[in-house]
Length: 44
Image (cartoon, rainbow, N blue to C red; front, side):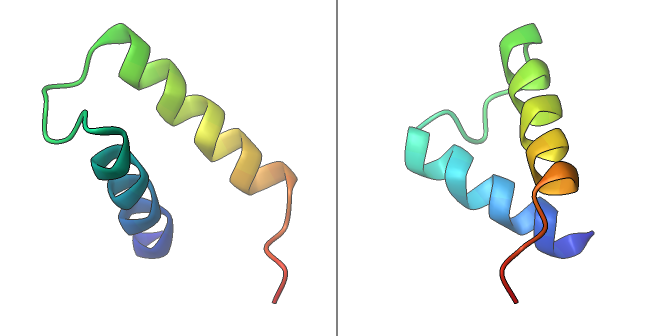
């Protein structure tokens, strides 16, 4: 779970929207990201 959190934090920083407070857009992006990580297993 921490892995997912830090991965998202890095991608948010790359997009230049971290550490803004969560908006509706950020929340839906977060949900999309979680769904992607759940549905697509990591290549390990």
